[in-house]
Structures are given as C-alpha cells and as structure tokens.
Image (cartoon, rainbow, N blue to C red; front, top):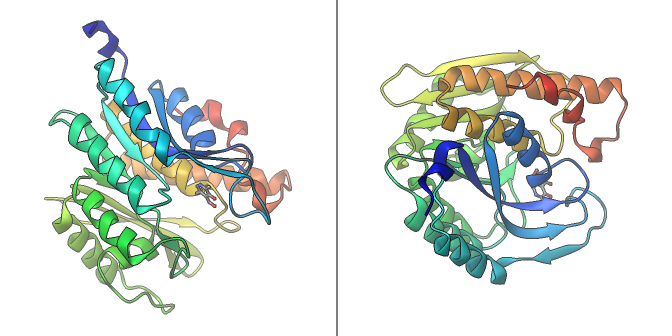
Length: 278
Ligand code: PXL
C-alpha cells in the first residue's frame, strides 16, 4: 500500500443515496468534500427520491455490500473517520458492525447517527431486533448524534410531549455515554420559541446551545448536521465549536429554503450556502 495515500483525510460513509430530496449521501458527500475531507461512500440502498414523497423507486444493496467492502480490504484502505446513517435492516447493521471490527483502530473516529425515529415515534421499518443491533453499534461509536426521540429509544426512556427539563436531557446524555460514546449531541430539543442541542462530553460539564426556531426541521437536515460533525471530528475541531457550527449552518439553510419558497419534501437548498462552510 502507498502510505502517502493517507496524506489526505478520508471518511468512509455508510449510507443510502437518494437521487432527489436533499438527503443522505447526496448531501453528505458535498459537505464532507467542501470541508477538505475525501468522502468514500458505502451504499446501503439506492432510491430515486427519499421516502417522504408519496412514491419512490428503491433498490436494496445489502447483498452487494460485503463484496464491495471486501474489495476495500484488498486495497488495504484505511480511514481517518467512519460514519454511518440510515440503516434499513438488521443485516445491514451487522455488516456495519463487521466493517468497524475490521476498519476501526485506536487512531480513527467513528461517528454514528442512530437513525431510528423522530417526533416521539419509532420509524415503522425499525423492528425491536434492529433496536438491539443499533445498541451494539452505539457501543462502538466515539461520537453519537441522536435526536431526542432516538436518545429516548436508546435509553429505554418514555418520550413525552411536555417541556423537557435540561437536567432530564443531560441524564439521557450521561446514560448514552455509559453505553460507549465519548461525545454525544442530542439534537432537536424543543424549548418554546427555541430549539436546543445538548453537548455531552465525558469529563466535561454538559452544555446546551439554543437557536431561535425557524420554520420546521426538513428532510435531510440531520444528514447535513452529522456530516459537519464527522468532517470536523477528523479535522480535529473542538466538539462544542463543531456542534454550534452545524446548528447555525442548518438554520441558515432552512432560512434560505423558506426565502426561495421550496416545497417541504425537497429538503434544504444547502448548495446556496455551501461556499460559506469550512
Ligand atoms: O434524511 C434521512 C433519510 C435518509 N434516507 C432515506 C430517507 C430519509 C428521510 O426521509 O427517506 C431513504
């Protein structure tokens, strides 16, 4: 293997590609690239557009994933970061666990977005068996980016519609920390006219960052957020700085999308602001 290959930072990103609707690899790739990190995708499935539309073409890629990954082993590739997003089946989570067993080292960073649900509800495709596998995956993560619903699912905590007290959310962060990850950001905590993120880092006081709520969260905003966290992590940016950067960027994207009056299904027009991201 040519050792100079590692002169450029690279992240292996395990996720689907949706051709339209601004989500998953279609946003992760340009964001990681503009942050000067090479993005190496491992496809889980191919969709014409994301599942928030009334219909979509879907091709499952599970059976092809292992031969694809085996070829990377043959090339003796190594990665500064490994990040995972939406996973469609128990088998896919198991393939990712195998990928980490092989490619995770003490020197690289694993970023897991435990996509399982939102707005207090678990996604209909997500079975109890998948939840159990996802908990295993979480135990291998260095950085985790759950939303509030996912933080509840992972910690077997009842989700509620009443106001969340910060101490309650901090306790979720601590519990997830006990499962493995050193750094956790719990996103989308409703606080009246604000939306808050909790930043939990082992050995540090938990921090909350609030932003004025603008419009509603749109498809793909979670993918933009975790792509920024992943690229910053391999670039050595401080976690709290990175969380603030990611949430400001998402907010700016939502504002621009409202200004351009784009349909909700189409996600956010992050390209308009991509040049401001470093
Ligand atoms: O942005 C999350 C996401 C990823 N992949 C697919 C999706 C969605 C959200 O709807 O449908 C296929």
